Image 1 (tube, rainbow, N blue to C red):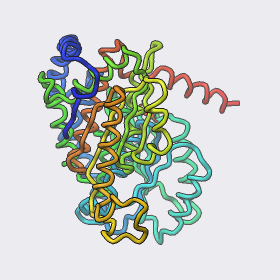
Image 2 (cartoon, protein in one colour; image 1 turned 135 degrees about the vertical axis):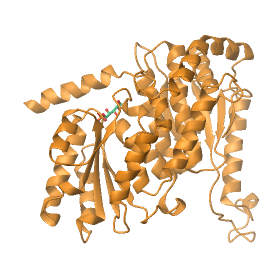
Image 3 (tube, rainbow, N blue to C red; image 1 turned 30 degrees about the vertical axis):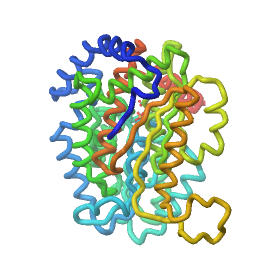
Length: 428
Ligand code: PA5
């Protein structure tokens, strides 16, 4: 992954150095923690990529369901329980992922919020299955008591009874050990995978939460974790040149103190939109507290250049923009001999990738000329390794950023407040 935090971030060398110095004790703490295997610290999620035992447990269970018959995997979960999986599976759609051993690649269907529309769409798809072996339901909830996830799980199990009779044997549960959900599921012999207590939802993508469904969808989870491991090593390294997490945290923090309170992840690859939404949750829930917080937004290039560019370039100068680019696979070309010559002459003979590159470079140059801060991230390849690297880097970045902003990156008291109020209302 190639990044540029210097040329257009409007952050000076002195600012980089002084923030890095402030973070030095925390960086040293992270170095110590990732080499441990105990999951006792708040930052414990950085141990996940190195957890061989967990990986074996996940692979073993995935293997028992992996077959050519399996067509659909329904991931029932919300927030940290589905966003990471969705980010990766959409960035690596089935034809581009290597087929998994013993089978094809199951298509993941996501059931997060309570919506009759989405529920019926999924139910209609599952009803087309000739047997229940063609689908698997994976219900994921760290707390084991999230209203939406519990309601969707119950409603789907019940609806599927009619066409397939009992489908409890097509359910896998991923939850905190000893949660009510864990106890209820194990007492009915439903296979359960554990989320370590100290790993919060938004930091859990490299636990069973992400790895189990992704393995069944044909994603190379070993490669994903290899990328994450390298990111932990680089992200705890002292050098600002190679430590992307540290450099990125510093640019966002310095920009924030200068009034750039909006953080725009601008992806010039539409298949990365869910990656932006995963990061949005990570940043919002980790930093939005004590009256502080960057407002994370996600933009898609070039689509949003046709709807948001006026505001981004001409409105209030209050955003730090991350321009994220990725290579396009396959080659589609505009013909040299155009059917409508004289409209846009410069595109003749160019590939769609050439055109997208020109648009993203043009976008960056315009930001620079207007002196609106940007940093750039460039995926050299869009594969499991680079995605693992990116997600892990972002999680470490947010830990550094929370330190600089002096907030706790790991709690979410206000999310709990809304969950509590919802339960009170439903009791009526
Ligand atoms: O990151 C978090 O902690 C939250 O966004 C949760 O992931 C989300 O609220 C879902 O909670 P649970 O996994 O307990 O069902």
